[in-house]
Length: 520
Ligand code: GLU
Image 1 (spheres, rainbow, N blue to C red):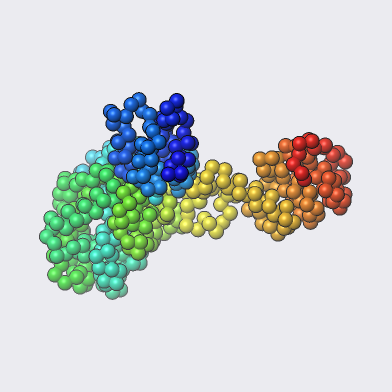
Image 2: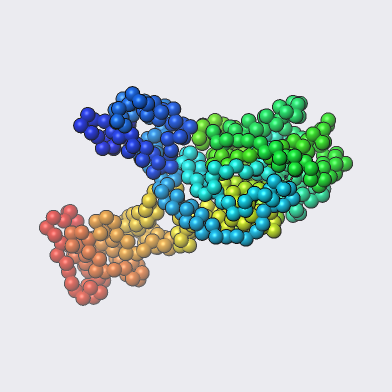
């Protein structure tokens, strides 16, 4: 109860000792948690009922609200969720969204009328973190068919059902280096990977083959529903009919694979290819797709419901193939410049996964020559310019390139850098000081008392550190909040060698520290 009490006490109380429901909602909203979040919706409704007078919440009511959702409330209120500064993330995503809006490049897919008719300039972006923090902007309520974005989900289903050994007796895991619907198989007569059409048709052959067609589709649709955690999931029948009507290439792929003996025994070819079209015709909106992406980011457990849909093992394999094969003939370039697993589809949908952080969906129907959403790709480029999300960003000093880590609390990087510098200086650790400065921390950085590395090195008499800092052009006249300078600190502590090093640079001026200065 004491944890809850502390949380409760962090809100302003009225004369009766109650707190405001509006304020709780605002604090949660600030953290990216909305009252319609499936994890708190019911509990929230219980403090919203007519019996609750004037929006005031008592300690008992607050405790029951916290009880029902594990540690979510506590972590949200204390800023401990994966993206602690969620408003900054919202501001960044909004800025990218606005920058993308005027972009009119590319054209909608026109191989079926249902896609050709989609208003081309729509744009929706939706984020869901592994802690279920959510933000959506643009045409977020508009449904779109998933098309090729069904491929990773179907692949996960096959892994869950059969295990990787069996699945990969029927489908490879190498990029094909060819178009997504190319009439080709690998050296073993198998489709190259599950992210291209032939491989996705193979996944369909492997999903619940003993069930009848209707039940197989129900099984897939139900999986999407669980992944979307309450966002509507539908089926676009006209897309399905149109796909089936213009399906020569996909049927050809099916026959070609059958000729090579790639399918499991007893596979019904026509039924399987039609099942693939049905999977492509599943429809949802950007926030639903963000929940799906966040589940992959979260290793197979849906952040918004806590339900495990896929094993971490299946997700790990799926993300590996999304990284190498998920973006049509742009996959290699995408892995090089964006460095994240993603899958796009000809409807203009793009599902981007930032493992252990968040899933993002971008939907914008105009496609580039390779079949990827123009704005979708642009979004990914802008995102990794801002954040150190590229899988290998951790190898480079991302701070120097202006990239940020949104997993850190506001100012955490700057605070930690300064503390490391001050700590090394006070211990006389020249190598430590050198390393911190090399990571981009400014030599004159000061703590909240205005104490710099030079103050600390001077008051401890670490001449080597003082000299090193001087070489880096530190501010010799920096004054702490008691009026002390590095020189006055060195004199006060009787470090003559340091005094000799500093004096010529300060013109001999020694500030007189305030009487109230701590006992340095
Ligand atoms: N239904 C489309 C096809 O198989 C999917 C294309 C895609 O999104 O890549 O041709």
